[in-house]
Image (cartoon, rainbow, N blue to C red; front, top):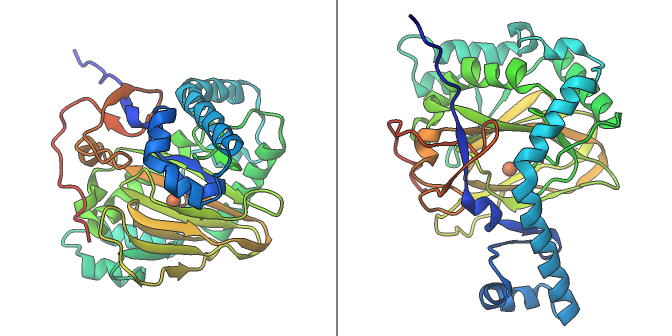
Length: 350
Ligand SMILES: O=C(O)CCC(=O)C(=O)O
Ligand SMILES: [Fe+2]
């Protein structure tokens, strides 16, 4: 008798609640255990960035304690929001929730994927079908969705944003946007995109980063608008690979900028500026340091998919750079697994 495979259990690394706590006003990612450690590790740099008085320090301490508590509750709260949205939200564009069709994808993207999946495909051949933004940094760009699909997705996201449904924050740095799994868009849209399309493509582009072994993701839409988030500080993603697609609307400013690779010795080069082009996706390694310049006018909505390969991250958590200390989590967690799947070499530092 055939037995159904048990659903995979994903985990996060315990460091999520103690490392990389972002404090926008000082432009710092902090490790936090207690007050003594905070003063010892960051006293001078905090003072140099304006955290000077006792009140400043006490306020920072309270914020960090709150952020740790928020992170501890995150998985359960997100699952609760997802359940509520599934039972009470009515979409404006129900078609978006049907299984992803080729017709939603740009012909250039389909051609690049089809080539990648063909016998004898190689990197050189694939690069003829993509725009190389930076050979050295391995950043590429390609139209991903049709204009009609971008428009429909944007309308749906805006409808959700205006609804009275509860909303999670996309990540620890962005305050506005939508988590796609909470909206129920992982199963019909993001998982098929990863499994059927991105895996063959990323497998050829980034075999050393687990491109062919992507087995989970975290997908969200970031929104920048006057009076809301306008820019994004320099960071690296909790992902092996990232796809960032500009969905619209009309905007000026907000370009991405890219520096060196995390953990690599800092290079004194000018960051590389990459303009967003509506409908197109930028592909990069999650560890490539990057941020977004301030929006000048209009509204910018981008779909960001953090792509994860447990075979890579099970060996080294990219956030604490140690062997992950696994904690069971909801859904895809942070993409770690307990099983001893065959692993691949982590990205070579460049
Ligand atoms: O604002 C953007 O387009 C970049 C977003 C980003 O880097 C991220 O969310 O990880
Ligand atoms: Fe990012």
